[in-house]
Length: 399
Image (cartoon, rainbow, N blue to C red; front, top):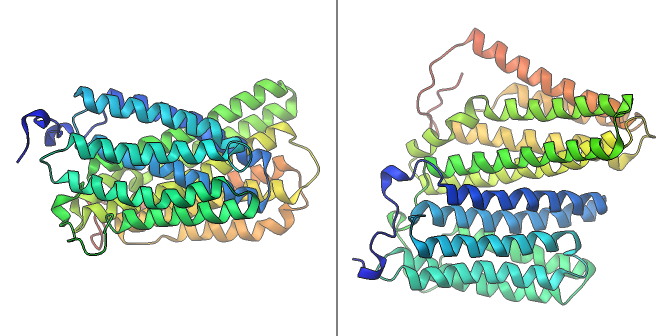
């Protein structure tokens, strides 16, 4: 049952397969967000700095993911929905601007903005969705976000390790609440049909975010080359780093990247699988943020002295991407493949000698490993060709 003021709010099933122009406009903000994350990591290239960047990435990823689920359910042509998305865009821009100094002087701005987005969106939906079952989901979300808000604010008024600890706990609880469908003690559990459904739409939205992350890497490569000039070593470094980016794109799209939507549709629990797919994409996007930083380091000083932090960044970005891509393939086909494991093992074995080599040589080594994975995949498909049918957990169609 719906009220007259809310009729037509829900998106029609036939219009859910593709993102609207409003949603694509919203995605543009996250080019800036990922650029800010890469800058934060570049300025704090330590293990603690990397962990802090991860916490910020998870917070931004949750803002994007929950907004994507909302726009997948609601009609983007309705003015209230447009107002909600545009307001979230403004908040996301402020949030992203606060990222580089989030563990410093802009910590309170980051925490308050995050809470305004998360709690504000939920309360807006509670009012907007009167008469819809989804109103209960939004209400529970508002309670959970408000509860974790105490941790965000506590961290904002602390500093250093204490802030990191509070915000880590806040992010963990936020993701746990989402995994539990914002369940609350003493209140009846919502049935699966009453929750925002996982669908091919969400798979397409995750692919779009991944491409945006790739675009940020390309932006970093181009801007660094512009600032450093077209000397021979910089030009070679530019070619190598762009080649790595192209190989990552190729590996991502190959089979599993394209079949994620059908896998979600064929799953016995589409909502749960779509959530897992979102998490694996965050792992890969974390790898791309690190890859963006490594590209800047390589182009900036291709033949520079070997540094452990630079080597760890070059190898770590690719390693995170391969780990996330391996998990995605398992979710889609319920199978693991040797090429990815071999690639990860080879990268690990190359670390000791790479610690003694300049950045450009390290990048070349990473590019060779990625090329080997692409070649291995092509050989496997030629030897065992099979039609692509809608896959799903325990229903592998890939060979």
